[in-house]
Length: 496
Image 1 (cartoon, rainbow, N blue to C red):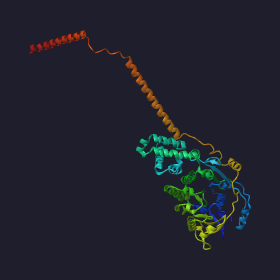
Image 2: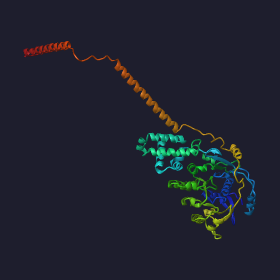
Image 3: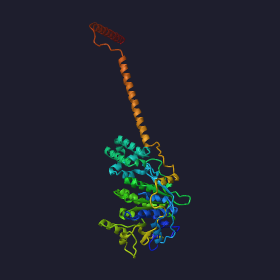
């Protein structure tokens, strides 16, 4: 049952496989709580890893961490293997790396504020359209003025700067209101209280570190600790979308390969689309459609197919449907929708089967030759080979100690960025104002000293004696002037 170019999922009336060459055509794993989705996810992750394909998956409950420990088959696993004729079943262990946005249960994952971008950050902060517009202006200003936005203190400093220059900025970029700045600042405070400040900064995650293989050629399974992260669902969903976008942006076009370069499992996928604006859903659709040509397969894991928008659902070719409950009209409608996404099998009613599946049983349809969906099969999923269930904190620490990325991300780097640049600018402005004030004070002091040192001006009022002397002087001057004039005129007359 184990073949080189396929991943064995289980047995219906025949063995069911995902062909590796169609592994980048994306997929969907759905089913109600307790029906076996996590085990199916582990089976698929193990299969891709064994085929040399690196895997990234969020671990919501901690159970997926068991892939890093040698399995010890429990009774149900042995029985399941016998029931489906899986004679090659054996215990196994797979290379794993642990990651954690908070840095507690794995290597820290960081991204810079600039890499996140205004659209995703607005979604994370739950901003309205006006507030998102102000955030876009702030990002544009940072680009124009060469300000590096690496962590949240950089963004806070930028917002303060925008507020102080609101009149100037509104003229060049658009209206900036104090109310919008305040709303963004409050949203950042909530994000920080949720632990989001740990995510923003450097060293930023290098995509290449998620695409490693071990010395035996097996793909590393990167496991994101998400039990605490799920308490901040917007942070969780936006981070995974950012990571998916980074894969799309950084990886080169490769077309269709004989196997994917990376497989990405998006657990609790409904969180990505709950209350998401159309612009964000459009972005998800675009990334899912185009990232396939980068050699990346995206597999959404959620309870119900209706959690996924139709525009995205139509791109998910490899499907595993566990049991759904149908007690309410909404649940019954969901079952019908799920049934309609499969290629019918004349041997049974797909809609009825969905409500009758047992634990570990699923409806499976995958791409066959020429990319045509297979007829849906009622399938018993194979047992995982590694440990089923979480490993201990001590075992996790031991695995991290020998991790190929050990030490690369453990210490945050705080280099010169917008916070420092704006602080210098504010300090320089303050010093310039202080120098100007001192110069003004010195000038005023000099003027006061000059005025104090000048001789006092005598009174302009004349005494009687001064008045008589001045009158006599004027009379003499007038007579002398008249005599000169007469003398000159006389000369002129005589000359004539």
